[in-house]
Image (cartoon, rainbow, N blue to C red; front, side):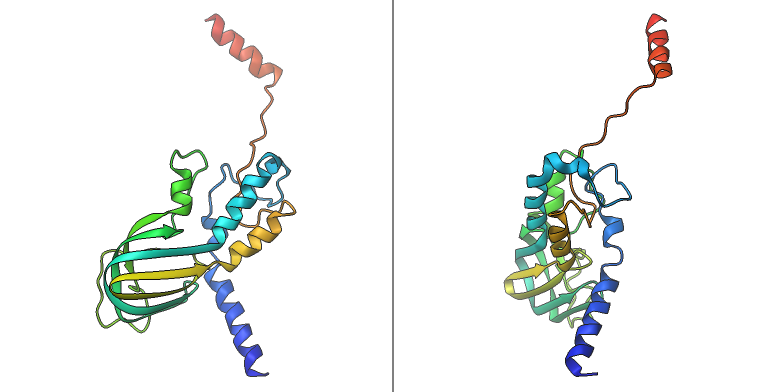
Length: 203
């Protein structure tokens, strides 16, 4: 087997392993359903497609101590040398939080996380020479991210392959990541339920 195909196969296996927990962690829509095909999200079609686009990338600028070049390829491979970096970070999808309920008042803040505080590189291998440990910033399991930090300021940018798949499949109403907002079907009351309610009102 040629080296290119070996590397490609290894990358696909690594990506699949790193993303194994992704769909079970996403709880953006509530209640969740087992089937990814949701005609009931038709009314949210345009907002959901915009949201899918916004899910694809992540980037941030950090202000704090550190000196490193960092690389992450899913949760399985992380490199940060020679030190970690820590501080407040502003950007887009800066941190991974779950679960997220659609009825939370801070839903969009938690989903896209434009601000966070923590460290990069704490779980990297080989272990950084200096570890500024203030709590690791959690990345999406499928995130492929590259960053650099120069003493007091750093930046990083990443892409999420699984979110690209979710974006493409969403065009034909397949919610691969189970993160679309949707309309919960209303439950019709039975005659017995209505009679019971009337009885309670009389008392």
